[in-house]
Length: 464
Ligand SMILES: Nc1nc2c(ncn2[C@@H]2O[C@H](COP(=O)(O)OP(=O)(O)OP(=O)(O)O)[C@@H](O)[C@H]2O)c(=O)[nH]1
Ligand SMILES: [Mg+2]
Image 1 (tube, rainbow, N blue to C red):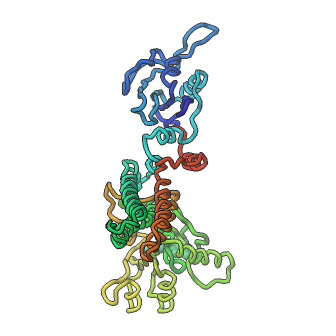
Image 2 (cartoon, rainbow, N blue to C red):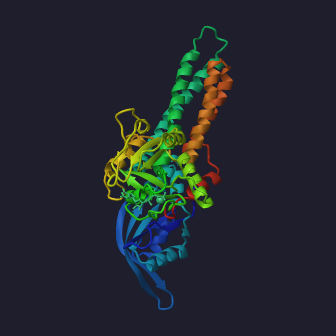
Image 3 (cartoon, protein in one colour):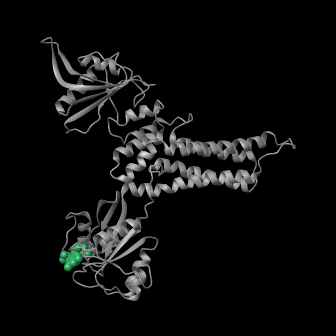
């Protein structure tokens, strides 16, 4: 499909080695012009030791640029599906630029971001959802995001989509059968309740996929946790303690933190994004007041709120925080346990989730006591599903959009079946669902517009 042969540096500059990738119909021919051996007849999946050389027309000598290893891959058994090669050079910036220059002089073109993966998709080596997983895999920074990307790359999402596709096709054909032979009174068709049960099953699966996006986003971007409370209770001290660095200014002056401060850490292989906030108090200071508004705004955006206290709060404070944290997990944490023992009243017990038994977690952010228990409580509040290698979690907004469209069209299918709508109208909506799902994988002749493809691949690094 492509005629250009492309090249790019696939590794980050600065390492001991650098890998240059070449892919396209002329990959081995062009490479042979600058390599000490002819590789045009090289066997697939072989490695060749030799030199990258530059011919100097003035001295009529060959200058050796580097001593390298070249891996040769043959179409269709390569990442892109084309003839390709990877040159492992020494990591010198000069060498790498020189080799790229030589390749370009001899007929290669610099690859665009993600162009190798785009070619892999166009050559049928992977579908679009797998291509997107490649970017996720490269960006994965913890166990959870790695596991999700790996599962998608290995095609678990694609297989679930093809199962859905089969069910949709079955439904469509049953409906069409009903249409084609509706005058034959002696023929029996699947009754509508059977069709409805297939449609419901499809709907449940699509909804499950769409729902997983929230978890996917949280795992990818870090689960947001706000640390809130009155001024001077030790919120910034706690942030610094959780991050193991002096990120926020700590002082005994009330109202030290004015703006929200965010940073991430991994707990048990999952990224959490902690947000330190301006302490809540009555103030006439306009800037501090803006900071407090931001604290309230931060609560709206998070799934977990750590409410830090260092004295027994009043009933009014308790009801204010519970109101603001409705729909979120509220962890009440008593700080400065080294200074003051916990003084719990009945109302405080109830905000901790249980009328009698549960008390706030006790910590000393300054001295580090109780931090392990707090981290464990944060992790369990996040309610991360126990991920297995086969779990399908949607992480791309593009895929999520397609699933939402599919859900929308499916709801009309269900409605149509329930209200005994004519089969041809229902079949029309079914076709829309099929095309929504096909958009995710880019399959089935639904050729993605170049714009959609460019949009997907432009976020990749060059060389992938
Ligand atoms: N003894 C003791 N002091 C603490 C503890 N945690 C924080 N402090 C002290 O409490 C004071 C306030 O700490 P910060 O972390 O700045 O408090 P904050 O809640 O961020 O305050 P604002 O930004 O003003 O809202 C500092 O002097 C801290 O050293 C603790 O666990 N024990
Ligand atoms: Mg602070």
